[in-house]
Image (cartoon, rainbow, N blue to C red):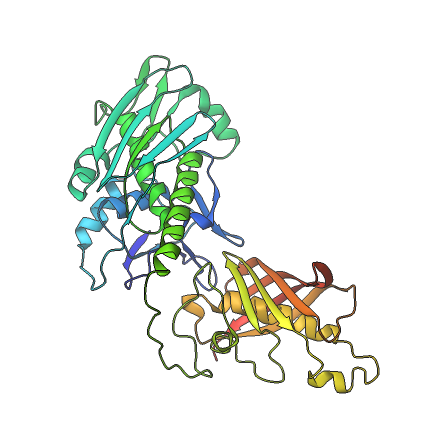
Length: 424
């Protein structure tokens, strides 16, 4: 694993340097795919397991922007704590960046219950975490509360190691969850005994590691959080659900605030120019913005508007009018939109989803193949074609997507498309 600096507003991104094209995954709660014993983020077929300790180290040390380059699907386990990662960060040093840190202060109490976990959040002017840790039988019950700062993080939390109960080991091994586990990088609790190669590093090492996990999972909100979090028997699943809840509250607060702000100053960007910034989740795009991403122009631009972008999914629309040039010959007395142009519309929408990423700005998406193509109903003048696309696989520069065109909620065509990202 190599930690690399990143530009302001990049956030934390994991880069798989062992895969073709070195795909990246944003450390965002929207990309969380698994939370069984650890937190896994994924994008299409690319996965990175056990990200919470690295994220905790970056967040605890106050790092907002970084690239985590990996040559495997999981960071090195180290000694089971976040200390080795903190040593890397301290050795490299931190550099202040010009942009102001974008904190989110929780505005109203929140609470979630997930299995045996109960997490409550209250407004606070800093980040404080109070946690109670115990197994299902109430053994080794511990409580610890800490206000998180770079200093308290390094001293009070970063050295706390992961732990498990002896009776869990067989299940974990059978499910391939602790292939690299040993007493060198974990503490094992057997009955009333603690098995470890060294003395416990803290009197409450177990609950402190639980707080360490919360810090890492909470960073998936995408910005530093100010709140007092009270957790009882937390888990990665509960932590990530809490991160989603906070991110949702933050998004609603941002929308509400924008209603009281003056409109942003318009910038003169040529419609034919390349996209200047990536398109974020939740964005909508008008045709001028689409033309800054796609190279297509009249009469071959098959997308009028993007109405929804969420992770690997996108919805766009094409308003089919009688003035479309293809109706002149297809067919003069019975105008029907050619099925291949509906297929092209799916490919263009898939291209928008891929080209919106920072690393693909200014590039082209070449249509390579179409499979499982079906045309179910004719599309006529006056129809509003809604195009739903989901990216299903990314391997280097090759991407696959599943798309469907709908009119009035009914599927009129569908296909699986493959395309390649290339330099313009």
